[in-house]
Structure formats: C-alpha cells, structure tokens
Image 1 (cartoon, rainbow, N blue to C red):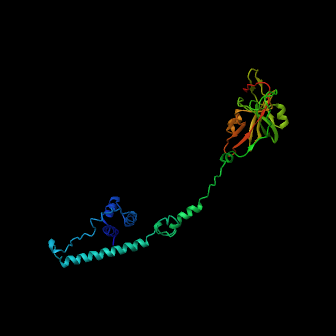
Image 2 (cartoon, rainbow, N blue to C red):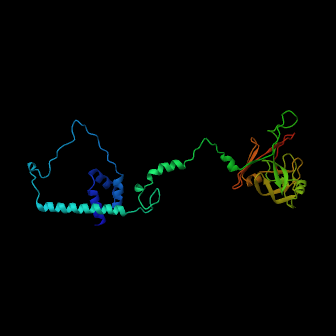
Length: 301
C-alpha cells in the first residue's frame, strides 16, 4: 500500500473533528498525521441529564424510511472496503512500531519516541535532585573579577594637628620598579610618567638620552634628563612594562600619570582611595595611601 493510501485510510478512520484538524494543519505524511492525532484533545459539553442521552437512530435498512436492503453486490464491495481498511490500519500499527526518531529520545537518547520513554516519569525527580539549595548564601562576584585588594594599612591622622586630613592629601601606591619597592604618586593631572634621576639610579634603571621639556603650572619649562624605557613595574597583582621620563622634581620621586592610566585602563577613585585596574586578563584593585602635604598643589605636567 502506498504512502498516500496509508495516510487516507488513517484520516478516514478518525472522527470528524479530528479529520478537520488534520486537514487544517495540512499534514503531508503518515508519521506527521500520527503525531498530530496523538496531540489532539477532545473537549465535550456535559449535556442535561433530564433530556436523556439514549436516542435511537433509524438504521439504513429501515423499510419505514423507504430504504430496504442493499444489493449483495453493494454489500460485497463494502466488505472488501472494510477489509482493505483493516489491513491498512494493521500496516499503520506495524509501521508505527518500526519507526524510530532521527535524533533518538529527547530524555534518554534511546531508539524510541519521547512519548514511549520509560524514564519520562522520573524526569521531575531528576530535576529536583540536580537543583542545589541556595541556603541564603551571598556571593561576592566583584572580588572574583577584580582579584584581591593590596595595600598597606595607614593610620588615620586627626584633623587640626598641622597635617592634611586623610581624605585631602596626595594619593600614593606601593609599587615595585625593577624589582625594588618604591612609593609612587598617582597624578591624574600629569600627561606622562616621571621619575627623578636620583630615584632612577637607586632603582637601577637604564636611562637613555631623549629630548623634551617638562612644564609645570606657574614654572618655567625644564629640559628632560632622559628616558627609562620598558621598566618592569608591579602594582598589586598587575605586572607590566612602563616607560618613564627622567625629569627634575623637588617634591616627588616617581609619578604615574594619564599615560599609565590609559595603558592599563585604570580608574582612580579618590573617595575610596583605590586604583581600579581593568586591563583584560589582569584586573585588580590597588588601595592607595594618602600622604600628608602641607601646601596646596596644582599639578599639570
């Protein structure tokens, strides 16, 4: 029997509302028709019990209606049609039993449909077992992203003792330059990174000649004394190479400016006294210490 005959016999054996639904969905093959038919649900109204449900319907062979018995030839054709239809239903059941999904069972991956999966009833239990209780736990995601905090504890100095308050002084970080510790001032008003010649010698930096001038606010421009290239610097958990310009400075030994902040994608937070380094793969937070400085300073280098 062809595919079209199987589909026709299957649809012909359904109720009228199911036939209309399959025709509305335009099923093309027998497998699709079986799947759609199994997904349908019949909704029926509950009738009034007083009206009664057992209604006798006149048969086709009732002589009162003028029908009479049908010829034997007609009955023979009807019997043949019924036999063909039953054979088609049997082949449909056989085809359905042999058919297998292309990708296997959705739940266990076995060679059967998901509707026939023996583990389907255990799905809810498996989901409950895999769920982990929260128990009100608090997760600090920011600490995982930004790594650990690194800083030395600085004692607070009370105001009115001749020193600047801890919230109004200059900002310093503890760093290592060329493997040696150094106190570095963070200056967002400086365009480049600077180091004095004396500090460069102490740190063992290699200074090469380089032109340029250093201009501070309300001071005359001074020539640079050279440059220290590719200096290894450690700041918290961050490690990298930084270029410094060697310049004469009276009050500071090492200054990191916008050149470094742009290099590591850093954010300076004076309120929390921290430098947030957001370089990809080396993110960290470095706490700053506040140094007391008696005079008010306007830096622009």
